[in-house]
Image (cartoon, rainbow over all chains, first blue to last red; front, side):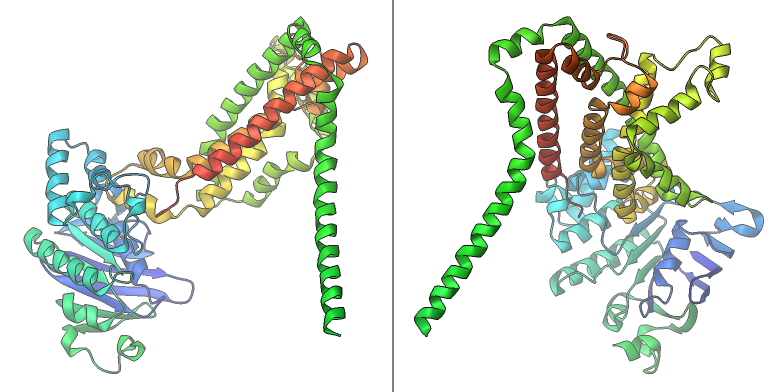
Length: 232
Length: 273
């Protein structure tokens, strides 16, 4: 389970947030542009330091400033897929998936096994040797997801994963994400600003407005007058 | 009326095409004629005969060795420097930025004079080196130092701009996947910026090879020790015209090859996803 409670002074407002995500649960983190969604993910991943607060994963502190604890990014084992997928364009699809496994020093037979497994799971079989820079938007997103899952993360975070995908790819990525989270029984945060996405993928939705929690609950119960609904 | 109008239009178009052609021809000739003159002034026999002259061989050897060493130092120190400089915020960063660019506008003779004032036998630092029995000015080391001072901005500016424009989500992703900062730099940042870095390195090599002003001020003009190709051209012009001509042609050929290399590398650069 992920437990996060932190504050961070941003340019226009203070991000002041407290929330939990249970194992096997998908939290749809919503809000208009610049409301602090990506900053929240970056703090959890360790790419940004909060001004105060803590982030705990399965009871283990990842960041607890009061006690001087801040686990390095590479040791947090968080699968983080950025908005642009950030597949490494100079590496092939299989090398992309193997990247984290190599960095973590896994034996080569285990790397090969997991890469094959991920390629099958994400329907990337025939693209193994294709340079990632030449993939379509949907293929890039699936490669990025496969790469993040391959390291067997303890938390999965996807930042606007559907923004550049067509309807078919969006459905495929949503289904894959859902099945992976259920299978691995890990908490998952999906950042989106579309209400439809939160209905289809989110077990729970949390709406951010200028760094504060505006609403939290089941996506179906989201009030008509909350920021995200107004923006639709 | 219609016919007069179309004649005037035709006349106007012919005139503008002629003026454009003339402009392109004038600029091209201005740049190409001096180079062509070098080739017309000599003959293949004279060129090949001068190539085996000990002065030419020693200048060519010294120029290539010092330029390669200068380039290696600039790449090995400049790449991590440019990366750390770009990724960090520290007081005086703007001043460092200006200092990086300074050698580009500073007259090379002033750069050489400044190096002499610092590292010369009675220089600010040179006097202490001298006390330890280390002499820098008027040695091959001085040639390398002058080349690094004058040529390094070409690489540093390029590296800085590449790292500034580099999409950091690639680096962040690599880190979250378990890569250390060093591994991320070596396997992600460097390969994705390599094309631009190589073209910066090639320009640096070319500038180091052609360095004259700072070298003659700080390192002098000793054959075999500090007399690089541009200095040998200067000597050749006074004593042996053919020798100067041969070295000049060699420098033109190398410079041309460098420019072609830069264009080819720029074309091959890996696009970001």
